[in-house]
Image 1 (cartoon, rainbow, N blue to C red):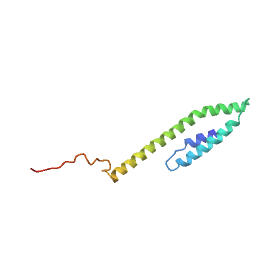
Image 2: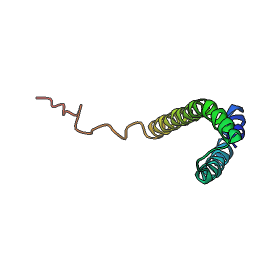
Image 3: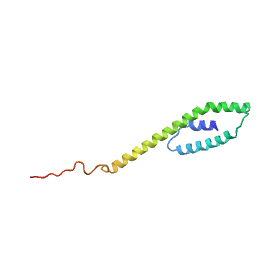
Image 4: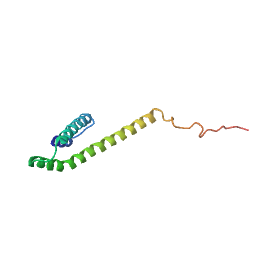
Length: 108
């Protein structure tokens, strides 16, 4: 499952497939967690070997997941900025105060 996580994170993530990738990540992480809970000492040589491989892959997985999260946050900020810009173009005078710049011109 750790190797599946690694291969899933190595594929390019676009805005079109991001939801599917995140869903698959969540499923794999939950299933992996269940398997890890079932492990109990003493560990066999094979389990120790697998544990060492997993320990080596974990930092890479965490880094790639952090990059995915950062990309998602950046895209969300861009979407919010686009939304603000679109609202500004729709109603540019929404935030303008009506009291500023108003005066009466009187002739004596």
